[in-house]
Length: 222
Image (cartoon, rainbow, N blue to C red):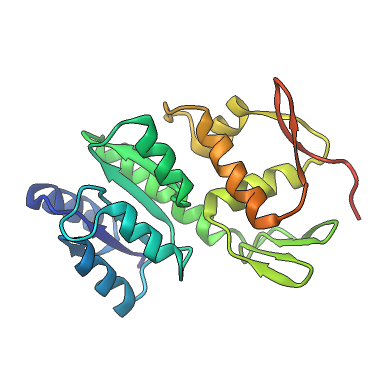
């Protein structure tokens, strides 16, 4: 049974999320402020975190930043803040998705299912090698020159998409449809933000910008 930490200070929303998630077969824990959230996170493992931004004591951005210092657990921000700057800031902190209140519970459950599936990976895929990179899709692991890289689920999917088809150009629209899903209505710059973070972690020019079109991995492999 997958375990989800709900970080939300509104009791009505807490109850709603707990009821739906438990009915869907998930184990849940609830934190009403940022301090409790970090305490629970340190005390037991979770498969996913639903994280509000406007929280007492420590806000959601602060909670996310502290968690990311030690873990790549999937984080889905669930908040009333619908501004572009808040969304870009969240993705800049390596969150996996951003959902604005009010939200559709069936759509939220589907997003959770997709994130958890991507995080778990599949056992049927083999290793993929590209220059100094080794990607193990079954374990969701990436090694650069023998050193393991800590990537978010979304960063992993982006990297695997590019390296599975070196030389192929992917537009932002293609990447949004493939990785974020048909129901994503956010800004295309979300893709740019994730690729910027991925490039920083790789510290290599493996992902090329095709000006005016999109992105690709160079054809050269080994």
